[in-house]
Length: 435
Ligand SMILES: Nc1ncnc2c1ncn2[C@@H]1O[C@H](COP(=O)(O)OP(=O)(O)O)[C@@H](O)[C@H]1O
Ligand SMILES: [Mg+2]
Image 1 (cartoon, helix red, strand yellow):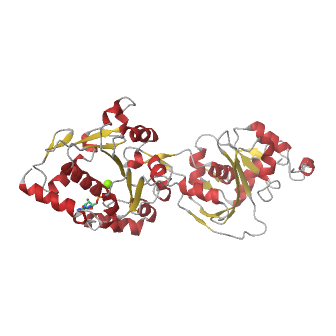
Image 2: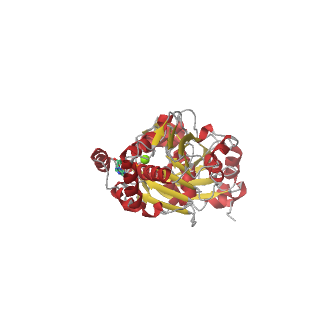
Image 3: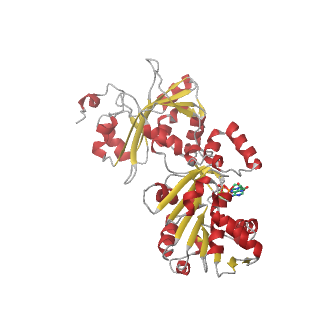
């Protein structure tokens, strides 16, 4: 090893504070799993890259693999970052870079892999690793994580993960943040923790902080994407309103199938405001328990209610058991888009007691391209039981997403009644008892 490299290395490893921010102190000690998550520019990648280089330079025959979920070419990997760190530490003469790997004079080796190129058999080639660093770990699949962890099994081996959180149920978040274990060291870090936070990034950060709080929270403060740009609805807030006495209530119902919740809610329109004041939400409600479930919504039997038309036999059952004004929503082509664009045009207020509605409004999101993170013009079909119920409830209030004038709303409502529609005085409403 050249003289200059020797001294640079010694100063680096003897005084880690020179190259690591204070938050990294504990990470410098051995631990089976180490996770750093948070917003952009917090130094996560630099910390792990620097630490990896120091270990490769100081431990004979050290073996490290840098993995990510998808690696189409070596340019997708952290190889360049590691080479930059090697240069910054003055270790250029000690390491040799080839097309695909970095090799040290002491027999150490750093390789780069995409997990999607691995199978249960091929992953065995990683068994001798001292370290696996998963970068962009928010994209790692459960399968990849399950393949990787038992493979990195050498005594004293470590698994590091760095990521910008996307969703609470992403495998890396479940693993590192969803359990407590003495084997796991995990920490959130943001730009404020990075003393080398560069000015170019600071300008971007300030712009987002001022113009787009959702984006700022996700990109820079490391919040889950539920609070971010992919969210379908930003035009809502929690709040309580006392509607006028003669207000017209709209009810919607979405049936749960095997593992889905059954969900219903009621809402009203007050000027430009759509107010949701009650919800019911439960897993595994059998048909004969539906009436008891639905009457938890105030006055649910008195008002018309629209339900998912995919279950006509259940609608029929409910019509005969206390809900004669229930009918199927029309749905049809473009109805999701129209319903969503109608809802996006209202000022939505949700009563705080509707916790599941609030959760769905937070997490209902457009699809994103897993490779580029770009937001796509299609909505993910999840987190939408109460939102579907809401779309059914308001179906008659708009045409192609535009709120109808009040008179037209009443007319449309009347015309849409099925021919066998029975008004509230209908006898079997009174006969029906909720038991
Ligand atoms: N240890 C360090 N030494 C010098 N500059 C650093 C260091 N850590 C971070 N930086 C600077 O901060 C920027 C953001 O760090 P990075 O590791 O890319 O953050 P993250 O991975 O959290 O998005 C880097 O581009 C670099 O300019
Ligand atoms: Mg990074």
